[in-house]
Image (cartoon, rainbow over all chains, first blue to last red; front, side, top):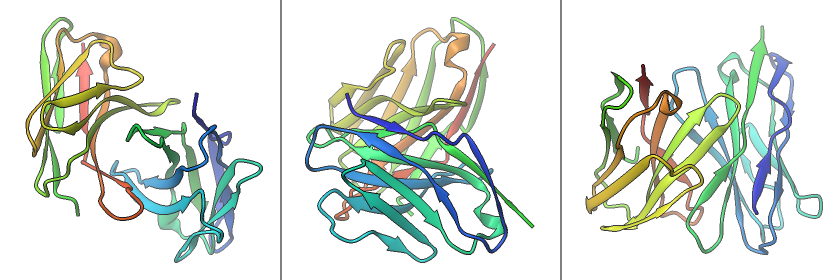
Amino acid sequence: AQKITQTQPGMFVQEKEAVTLDCTYDTSDQSYGLFWYKQPSSGEMIFLIYQGSYDEQNATEGRYSLNFQKARKSANLVISASQLGDSAMYFCAMREVGTYKYIFGTGTRLKVLA
Amino acid sequence: DAGITQSPRHKVTETGTPVTLRCHQTENHRYMYWYRQDPGHGLRLIHYSYGVKDTDKGEVSDGYSVSRSKTEDFLLTLESATSSQTSVYFCAIRGTSGYNEQFFGPGTRLTVL
């Protein structure tokens, strides 16, 4: 069965530093998509970044980048130059090919310290 | 903004009562989803729909039913609410960009006493 694992329930980072949030996945499919979402304390879910399994380059979106290591089945989110507004819960997710379903990890709560 | 609304936004009900949550979207998206979010569990899929009258179960579908009689509305029903169904419920649609990322509604906080 496909699975997403986020092993860091909570993390702290100093403002202006970079932080890496871990995500490992398990799938036997060759084609899949990986996503990161942010959930601030206000509760909404915000799409951040996407990585396709066949993408040769790591995805980047502004201060967000995805460290994609296919052989290790990891898709870690890197946030550069952390800001206080980055304090939130972050979820890693994977799209199941052929079923239109998505599975989510349990999330990592990030706190940025001033 | 994918134009997704959920109603009600908050509800308190008693064990054994039926509850219906509504998800409404304005952009004619084909795929719609219901998730529940609980601490330590992330988001878990309850049911999803791939078209009008076409629905399928997710990983935590027991105790829930859904209906989709028109493209814009996806209803989640708890036939007889239990305290274990106290949760935050999110509706989502599947976007139509190359990424097929999901866009979420604002959530409904349901408390079953």
